[in-house]
View 1 (cartoon, rainbow, N blue to C red):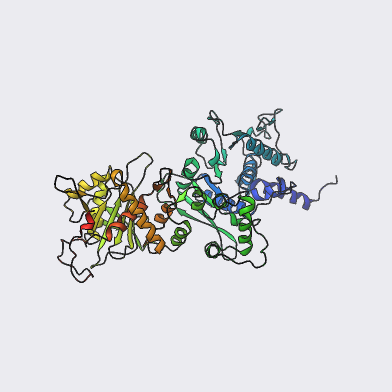
View 2: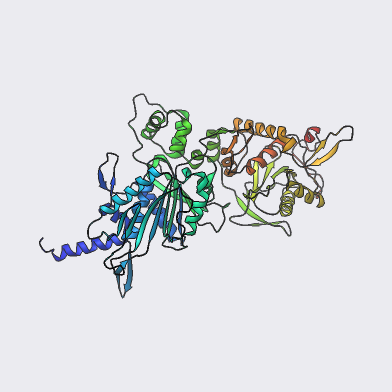
Length: 598
């Protein structure tokens, strides 16, 4: 071989340096993958993988650890991307040192250990072959010496000079989720949990605990939990929905992919995990020629408005129903979801119409203000992430009903939820959602009731609801919802609060049916999208009752249902602070309606 010119040598040196600092460049010049025609081709990142790279950079830039849940459609290349990126991090990511005005390459990162866990033995073998294929096609100058490349383990080590500069002593190991303690005794720096929603239920919790405890809390570590959805509940669904940082990938009006991030305010502030949802339509391969006489359905028109879909994408989506999903729409929603809620709700019979809920959710406006309550004096202070969202401040002559779902205090950590509704229209003008002790919740409800003109308070009477009610009575709050209970031969007695369990099952169904009618009529008055989100998981269960799926909550739904049901029969709340107020209903307070106590 002829000697390189100085210019050629500089170009080669720059190529190698770039390979050590630029992962996408390294991937397309060194990694080979099998395409859909089973041909080995250079690995050039697709749109979904480029977006994941951008999100990775955003996480690192903000100083967080790379801890990611990815919910995806079929064959979008997430496993391929993470395998390739992890191989680069282990075998080619360089360390650099600034000396004067120069930044010099000083070697590779050593002692890195990656684990890949697949959901079954067949996929385990497939992923290991992918790891081998990626490693075996690296340029000879960049390939690392290995002491082992079989038995689902690749060990990068120079046996002739174990402590030398070319001996990384790093590993890639691939295993199956049919073991309970993979990772015990190991120190991992990269962990890939593939198709997590499909892991065996009897192993998943102990295996995740083992893997998580093998990961140090360092900036050069990474965890990827990725999967297509498999219904509500389970570790993947729970982990995805409780991430603190929520990334959404979408198409703009020119069909270019972008992402945006928001904070999940219900998540633990210490949770560093980020969730990423990648809808099917981001993939450019999911397009198909539009047939003659193609005409969009009303549902497709809605998708076009919400997701900026093209007719080519709609044509492919139609084709996928009989050809990839057996004609089952629920399967198509799960395998090729438009949004996270749709992916997880593919199974079961929703109590509320899904498409209507999704449409109404898109129409919600952000609150005009947010507050936290100082329970010591009942004052509300403005706070950007306050637990009380407000769409309308109280009006001097306004009449209001405040319905309150009380947390059951269970180990899974449900929430208190309270809705402030306009008495006449049922519009949700404020909403509280948070966690606190029952007696604190009573103080909050009193403060909120006083703020909204001594509104009716309608607390749910469950286990902790009884304590909330007792605190309201003790505080002598003037307007607490009550029912008259017939107990012949004794006189009727008062019972404060709304009963939704036990003997109240009949009344609970009446609530749900009334709420369904409001949704059907298109007049639910809901301003908070979280209420709609919970409705998507509110389904008819095996026992015939309609409630939240396991692993999800319905506190926002229940507080809204209670308020909407009782407000139509309740009289206006009596005011004690400033005398009579013009109610807007003919100028007089109504007399108590007996239906309010049924």
